[in-house]
Image (cartoon, rainbow, N blue to C red):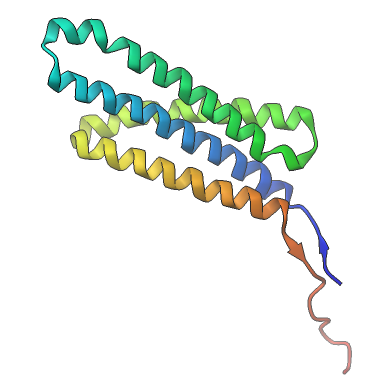
Length: 148
């Protein structure tokens, strides 16, 4: 007989990585927009226009990270744990977003694109991990040494 058991570690870590990855990808997207503005606008107008998409992307990334961290950790049924995972996912998204600036400095525009794609892929894979941990079918497996 199979029963549905939850893997709290997979749910928690998956939700945390999902929020951090997708939130970090959102922040990286904002940095890409600023990088594109840098090339299109003259320096006087760039200084006036660059802060708005970067701040909006930063706030959106924090919101995305907290939301995905919270939603993917809902099967834990513990409000405190859900909140902690949401907050840690937002902090993780900030770290991923700040590391995108390092990727931009080292590899330029292609590095920033690669970092955004990598963040998105990690976020989506972690989301699947959290969902699989919440709905894992576990059976007792074969009995070893039962004499038959």
